[in-house]
Length: 184
Length: 98
Image (cartoon, rainbow over all chains, first blue to last red; front, side, top):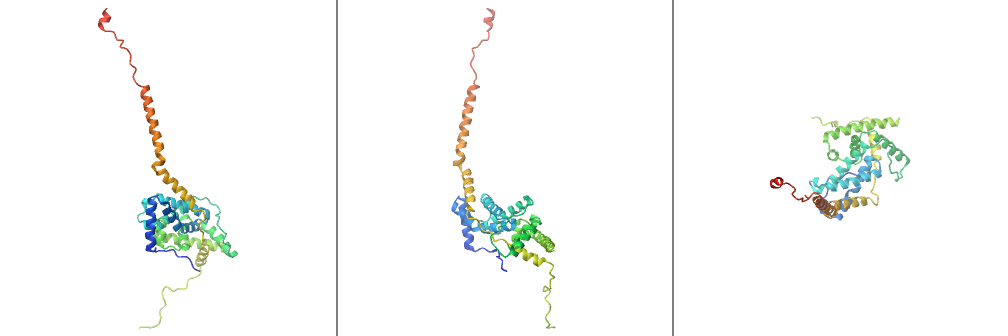
């Protein structure tokens, strides 16, 4: 079973191109703005979808994250780090949505037809994730699904690494308990 | 010195308490969501609107209209409160004595 590993190092060529795009956005160039969106939208949507378990809401969050990032470019210290900047915004928007969301069954995209067992598994996981607090849920998804490191999760969620560790431990334990309960 | 291989302290048999199974299930439920074809459009539209609102060409007409209205109000208000000249009707001492 292979999982996509999040890139922790970005090629220098891409970094300088990204910095050029950010500079272009500051000057009002639409082509630079669309280039940044194109470069980062897939990752933002995938992560948001895995946290929120809703494709439509994930796209809403991703769009909101981009607009917020463009409005707050003055806060970006390193132009080449726009990817991490907008990713952090998206993760925190996801957590805000989870906090304000009423307890409704999440809709998810089943367009990719797989074996019947896989769909059942996905439905079960969705319902178990709903039982976790937003902080625990986001941490667990970022670690287990997005394969981020502890440092990356800390940066994305805006908490110290120690807090990430304790949240992850608590989230895994709770998820395991719920999983075992569901198997009975 | 003994050449017998020592058991590596980290290589322990872990009891299957459901942790691995649950995490495997979690990873299998990973979504591969991809952007819809018109994902970029709302961002572009909104970005254009926000930029135009910030630009002087957007708010200058409002500023000019405001200045003109204020000037007119000042001019009309000034005309309404201007003092009206009235003839001096005070009696002099000489007039009263006559």
